[in-house]
Image (cartoon, rainbow, N blue to C red):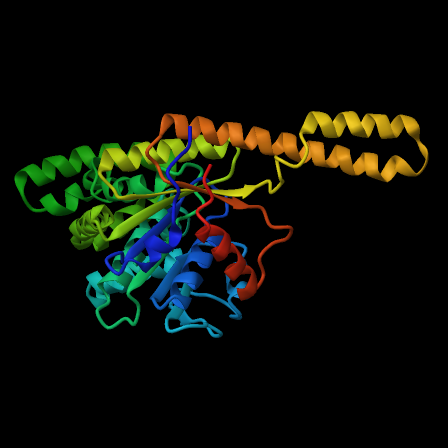
Length: 380
């Protein structure tokens, strides 16, 4: 079975498309794919901002920048009529910006200096994914920005579904039952029922203090009391960005490698996108073994190598080259089989394969090469 080809240039040239989201399992090349797409789009006339989450910081070096931070920086050396800005998500700084934008100065300072907030904004599960969505909303809503296309490299989650699920999880935590229990005494203080609730709460917090520690519990209570006015804002903004991702102006590109785990994650994500009614652009299969399957079969190569090995003499090098060729063919056959299984389960998903490069991308020339490979629309 053959999948419809994915033509990347049709996606990035479409002026109706304003957001492209590259997603998939960790370690499949999402960051490089996003950067290569952004560069290609810019050099084809689009004004692009690429938002990346790359702990290795290779992207900054590849784009000729000394560093990337939470503010878009223009990338020099762009050829063609477009422009390219790049930024790296600073999870904590983005959270700080949210607090500063939605709380008065006094309350914002109380939140920013709270120890529980420090932990929440730096390491709480799902915060990075939520802040990626938050930053996307900020970039898209900036009417003075010079870009008309935003390309998002999603966080390296343990599951591809985290990017969509995290905003709801964080919102549920911040306005959830446990948090509201912590603030109930303050809300009911001075009233009869409030005094009764406070008495019961004292027993409850006494137990929690033994489990969590009194200082931790105090920090949580102080944080919740300060951030209470922003509860609705977290959920509203998450819902708005979620709706933005469902619009026809967005395209999701699911990135995978031709390995069973990565394609399994890709399959889950394709199904989730379809369930949520989100616009799927297609599947990019990265790091495919580039070998001519028509030149010499693996069986023929191995038989020839065995024959040469028996002859000995100066034929040893040729035998080893034939064995290497056979191994690459076998790898390619396995990769092709795994990709065909994905296509069989999702026959309508446009797909392209990208050949593996001999070395990591470390400059704009390398990103251009990846962009050209992406644009070929190699059928599977």
